[in-house]
Image (cartoon, rainbow, N blue to C red; front, side, top):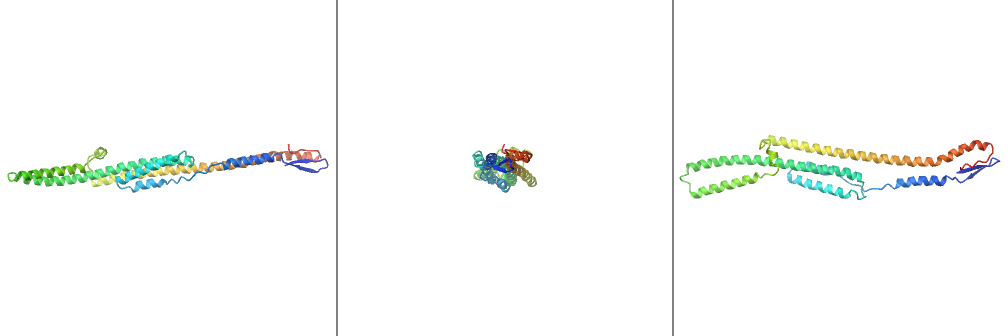
Length: 268
C-alpha cells in the first residue's frame, strides 16, 4: 500500500502499486504447485511372484510361475509411458519383475534337474532289480535250454524288449542331462537332498536380494518426492516474501523525511 505525507503531517494512504504484482506472483507459484499431476496407484505386489516361486514344488508348477512372471512384466511395460502411472514407479517395478522371471526360470531348471536325478536313481534301482531277475531267468533258461520251446524263448525276448522300452522311457533325458550327470552320473538320496537344499538356498538368496533392491529404490523415490514437495513449498514462501520486500524498504526510507514535513511518495 502507498503512502503520502502532507505538509501538516497528515498521512494519506494510497493503493499499493505492488499489490497486483504480489498477488499474481503468489498465484503463479501456487498454480505451478497445483499443476503436479495425480497418478493412479500402481498396485504392484512385489511379493506376489516371489511367493509363487517359493511355493513351487514341481517343474510343472514352476513353469506356471514363469508364465505368470512374464505376464506381469508385459503388463507393466504396457502401462509405462501411458501417462496414467508414475513412470519412475513403473521402472522400479519392471526391473524387479524381470528379476523374478529369471529366478523363476532358474527354479524351473533346478527342479527339472532334481526330478531327472531322482528318476535316474529310481530307474537304476529298478534296472538292478530287473538284472537280478533276468540273471536268474537266464540261468534257468541255460539249464533248461534243451527243454525250452521256441514259444517260451520268443515270450522271454518280447518281455525283455518291453522292459527295455519302459526303462528308456523312464530315462528320457532333456538338455539338463549333461549338467545333472556330469559330476559322476546318478546321485544318492543324501546327495540329491544336498543339491535340493543348495538350490532352495540359492533361489531364496536371489529373491531376497531382488526384493531388497526394489524396496531401496522405492524408498529413494519417496524421499526424492518429499524433497521436491519441500522445495516447492520453500519456493512459494520465498516468492511471497520477495514481493513484499520493496514496500517495506521504501517505508523505512521514508521515515526520516516524514519528520521534516516534506512530501514523500512511498509507492516508488
